[in-house]
Image 1 (tube, rainbow, N blue to C red):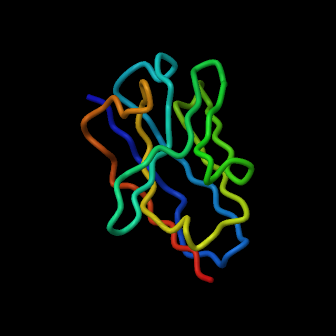
Image 2 (spheres, rainbow, N blue to C red):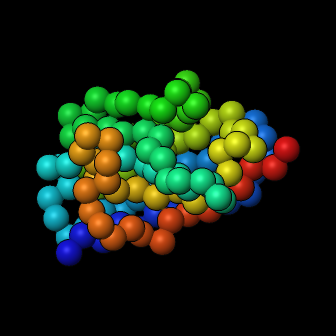
Image 3 (cartoon, rainbow, N blue to C red):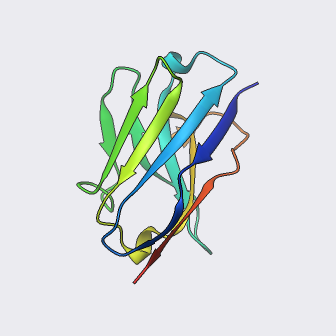
Length: 118
């Protein structure tokens, strides 16, 4: 079964940067479009960035120009470089495979907490 392990979160001041990592195992990584989701307290989980197996990317409007998603198919890893962080980016971040803007795998990883202080 697929396992997703997120890491790299932390506490950062507004304007700072973080790089999140997601390790994928249990299936053929290069078969999937991968995405980063986030869930802020009291809000629904939302997709913020996605990358196809060929490297095409798509971003939510709230993070476009600040976040960059990338992947390493040789290492079964997907990354999220987050720059110019804002307090509104505070959330738990998760990765998952994506189809039509929805997650594919029912099980989520533990996520990684990102907290941006003002």
